[in-house]
Each structure stands twice: as structure tokens, then as C-alpha cells.
Length: 106
Image 1 (spheres, one colour):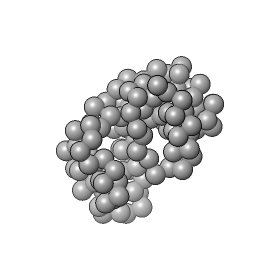
Image 2 (spheres, one colour):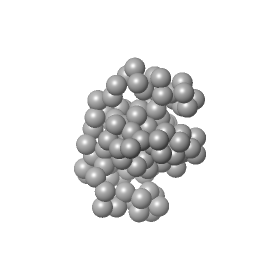
Image 3 (cartoon, helix red, strand yellow):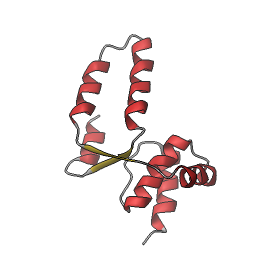
Image 4 (tube, one colour):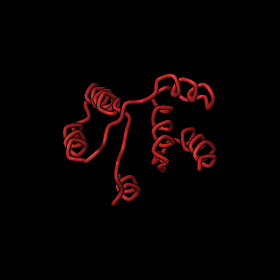
């Protein structure tokens, strides 16, 4: 988690408006496995200042197909492109798509 915190330190944070549902899904999966730290993680996320954005579902679907991403990952890539902002991710496939797609933007 320290590396993630370092990547976002001092930056404005933006995410597709699906972020909360994704976090709830991750939390539910961890709770089913009996992980006890879930509440702390959810509390940390709740305290973060993150601007949530509606996505262009058509553009996201096209991007998902183009880069062979899930629609969820494509939503983050689409938003980064729309905002002309860097994308922070540990997912290699998404990072590769972002490097390719965002490099072509001016």
C-alpha cells in the first residue's frame, strides 16, 4: 500500500463513478475469505478526496475491445484520456494500454 500512496501523493484523484461499487465488491470478496482488515481499508477510501465522473459507455466499450480490457479497466483508461491525466495502476495489461493510448493524446 505504501507504493500506491506514494504514486498518488499530492495529486488530484479522479475515478469513474463505478469506483464505489468496485470497492464494495472487493470488500465483500475479502470478507468472505475472513480477512479482518476490510473495514480499515474502506474507511481509508471513504476519507480520500476522489472526484467521481460519469463515463461515455460507448467509448468505453470500444476501448475495452481495442485494448482487450474489461469494461471496468477501460473506464479508467477512458477517464484518464478524457482528463488528459496520468493513470495510476498496478495492472500490467491496463498500464500497457494506457502507455499506448495516452501517448497518442495531445
